Length: 344
Image 1 (cartoon, rainbow, N blue to C red):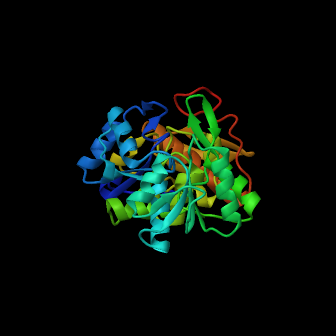
Image 2: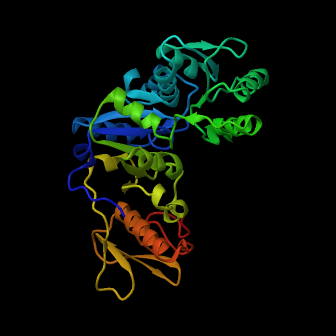
Image 3: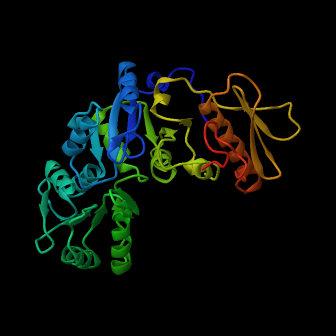
């Protein structure tokens, strides 16, 4: 259920597609060690792309922010859902097509860079593009919604329902998409994760024959990798904790798991079933996992007991139980090494 790579991932894959929030940075701070891990991956010959569902900022602005955080990034290293949306529209309607732009500066810039003409809601348009824009006015939303209801083709940059802000988790572009869908009865084509176009656009722009998706969210990053047919690495510096991981269904399960981006520069071994055990059990390194009366139990059985291997054993043990019984394991007594007794 997890993959094994005898080589470090940075040698086994030629492109890392890194989600940003929760992977490279959290809020206004870089994830500890992220910049160094990215350097190590590049030194091993891996291309690195920074991809984001947030359509409000241009690639140049995102690259500047990364540099401010100490992460080496050029504009060409960044790919946004706005760029993926613009590609879809340019391929369908051709250069010079007027597109109603319902979003922020990042969406408008992406449309114009793709050779399209970004127009407002009261101007002639061949299609509509929408994306997160904190300064959108209600009149703009109404104008776009009426035109979409009347048949204007619609591409949405993403359907994320939440977005992190300085004042807490706030409604994301997906909330606007839901509202417009209810009003119009129309469903947009979606460019951002977990839909495939953003990952395809990243490979097209940055290159690479064997890409690896790297993210912290199961329902966007990892599901997006499945949809695009590429392998994935889940890092545990963001929103996914033990509760989410053990309950993951097949389409949300990563190929690899690592505590952080340091996992790019290491080999990965998957747990193996313990054939000698009376009940289903899994082992890796110094850890052995089993489910006892519905409860997840991961015990140290040897000296080579790393935190990364604990997570891998916990995940595979729980997934095996879920696939056999249809039930998620109870993690109330599980203890992630180095944390409080009650795991997140």
